[in-house]
Amino acid sequence: MISSALDQRNDWRAPCGRHVGDIPQRGRRYEVQGYRTVLEQKIRGMRLTLEEFANYAETFALEHGEPGTLSYRHLQRLVSGRNAQGEPIRSVRASTARLLERIFGTPIDELLSQPAEREEEPPDERKLSETAPAVRQTVQLQPSGAVQVASGHGRSQLTASFAWLDERAGWSRETSRKQVTSKVASLDPGELLDRYARRSRIPRSEIAAALQDYYGATTADYGVYTARFEDHQLTTSIVTRREWLNLACALTPERDRLSLVNADEAESNPADLRHAVDRLAETVALNVRLTNQPLYRLLSVDIGSDGIAGTVTRVPFAEYALTMDLLEGELVDALADRRSIQPGELPLRDLYLPDLRSVLDVSGRLCAGGVPALCAIARPAELYRGGRDYALLIQERSSEVVNAARRLAVIPKGFHQPLTDARADARIGATLLRKMEDELFGRREVGTATADQRIAAPLHPSRLSEPMKWLCAEPGRMRTECTGFGLNLVSGNYEFTCLTVIEDEEFWDRYGGQVEANWEASGLRLYSSRDADLISELISEETWTNEGLFALLQGVRRLAELDGYRVEVPAVETSASRHDLS
Image (cartoon, rainbow, N blue to C red; front, side, top):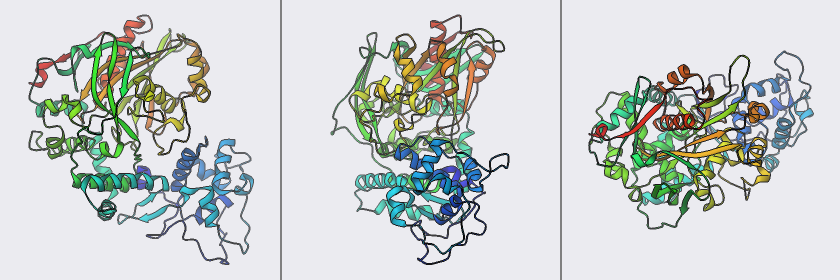
């Protein structure tokens, strides 16, 4: 993760090139002085820092279906044998205990006990590999001094990306891996993180304006999404049309009709090999989570009064990450450096998305996309808060995500992609349900951070979280709608903006305390639908993603139509403004 490259509190450093499997020879006396617990001793024997082991444990839990979690601070207390008050630890959460026992094959009581000084056998590498395959990690010391950990899971995902790049470039096997390895050796993670921080400070409106400067052409039917809210005039990077706005399209099987087709002959994007290698090297240097699960690629779309129809096919995530997803970084870096944003000045954009015609030609290019959704939860009146309202949920994206890092977004927000049933999962509602389970209700096994999906039906009613089971038990407890559609000039993505309304306020009393963002968010904000001042302030913030603001404005507008009593915000006037592209 990015945090492991930054953290200056690393407890131990591994020598360059050491492997977890490089265990001392048998018969050697282990030094136990200074080890407070057996757990600390075992982690030290793995040649990992506490933060690296916490990251590893999270990945292990995800890959093995364990619900336990282990934060860095929690691990610090466990290895010390003392709780936050300095008292001996007498109990550990059952899920955490089970996770640690499965990793080490040792009872939790023994892990938390003091190690005895004795002549003992070193850890059995074969046993470790059987109980925890991902523990065989390579720990490398980069030239800058930052520790880089590549887990077994991470390596397998990078291997898939290397294979894709080798095939696309016509290179012999392992060529891209060697090029990335060479590139990583010359990178300074500190400089990379500084660049990512500069990107996050570029205002949303500046990105939208720069893209309008780049795309000077206009058409009679399409324009950029513009909204007026109080005294705010907001223009985004979303290309849309009047028929695609304010849809109020219920995501029922009859109206949610995207379908999967085989499109082996679909045209592929060319690959800019130098930039693709650079992207993979940065991913390795900062340990960003990158999984090569398939995405849906949009081939056609038909939005009308009878609902949403169209066709999609599948592409590997690597194809998107190493082509279209590079456009945002190129644009924002140019803005941060105050360089010109004109055709001929942005090589990747000139290659992949040179004009408005290429933006609209979704069948002629890779057009991946997502389902950003505003979530509104009905709440009863409360003494301090006031009358009945909706809780509106907004997330601050973490530094570990592939795109939109450190920016505001609605929640859930996710790529439109299949889990196990590629045909059924093509529906917008399937992605929305999955992302709610993952991002709001803690169902990590339905997320996309793991490469392997071992559950046949992850969204089977018997596997749903307790909050989702309750919502689905009776009609009328939850409403899901598509509110708009557009194409994002930032990376050419399609955006199906949605609104999820939990209309039964009993949900808040039962499950409000269980709503919790996952690793993709660094923070979660909650706004009352009756607080016009704070919502107006929220809308005007410049750290939004353009698609997130699109979803928020479309969602707030629709929410006011559904329930004027709970919603007390000024009207949102929206349009597809053609003159903004001229």
